[in-house]
Length: 182
Image 1: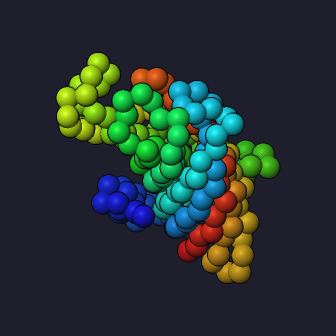
Image 2: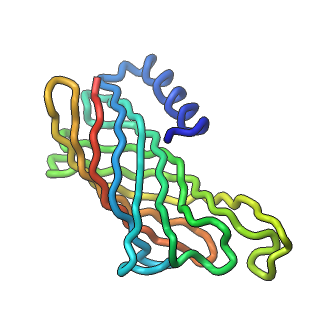
């Protein structure tokens, strides 16, 4: 599920942390539901969401830098003239842990590059081809993870993503997953 861009971002993150004295390295994958709060099919039409990522913790496990990749399958409710049924993204964020804030959840803020396929000539008319359109937008996350055994982790996460397309899309994800923390 990890594409070349995500692997490159994860490799850069890990090489940075080799000199920054990372406390832990984590890899995880999971899935759940996603729904459009605006710019899509609406809250009443949740779709399947998958995500994966890598992260490194710094500053005594108070900060974690994460690279992530996800896709939301959306068979209905896509914008008019869009030729893609997926809402794909690759991004990064900085996670502040419970250890740093004293909150019951970890919180993260970051940015992601969203990808959609549009018919050539969008939005005016279809000129017989398709093109990828990429847009950067912010996202915020709240999550909780628990250790299982020596290296295992289970987690639950909710994310709010803003993709500045036409129409603008605000998407909410709720995921669960597993991972390893070394």
